Image 1 (cartoon, helix red, strand yellow):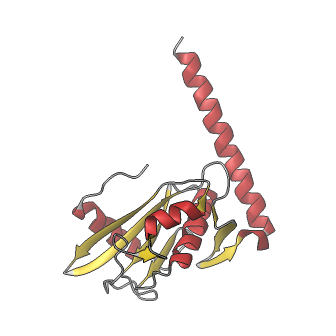
Image 2 (spheres, one colour; image 1 turned 180 degrees about the vertical axis):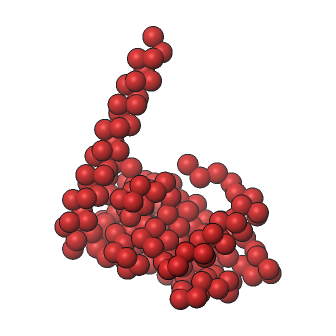
Image 3 (tube, helix red, strand yellow; image 1 turned 90 degrees about the vertical axis):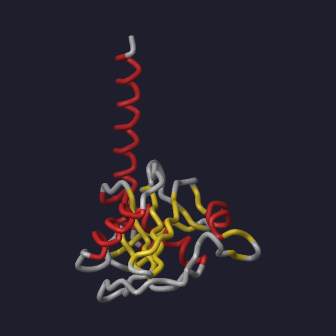
Length: 177
C-alpha cells in the first residue's frame, strides 16, 4: 500500500517515469486534462494493466508533455478538484469497484506543479469504473470486454496471484504451530 512520499522521492519517481521512451501500459502522461470521467477510466485501465504485467503500481502523471516527456507543470490540483459538488477523490472512490488503493501526490519541481496518481494493481478481480472494466492496449485505454484475449489473460493472472496469496497465508498459519 502506498505511503506518504517525500519531495525527493516524488521528484526521483517523476524523473524516472519521464525517462521511459514512451507511455506504457502502466504509465500515462497528461498535461492538464483532469476530466473526472477520464481519471476514473484510467484508474481502472492502469490497475488492470499493472496486474497483467506483474507491476505493483501504475501511474497517471500530470504536468508532462505527452510526446517529449518534458516537465511542463500542470494547473490540476486534485486536493481542491470537485465533480458535481463532491470532492474528486471521494467521487472516484464511489465509482471504483472493487475498492482499490490509489493516492494523489501534489508537489513542485523547478517551480512547476506536478501530480502523480499512484494506483495499486488489481489483485483478485478486474477493476471497474462506473461498472465498466478498462485495460491499456499499448498506450491506449480500451474497454476490456472488447479485447477477449487480454481479458482471459488478466483473469488467469489474477487467479494465479489469488492462489499464491492463499497458499502463502496457509503456509504462514501452519508455521505458527
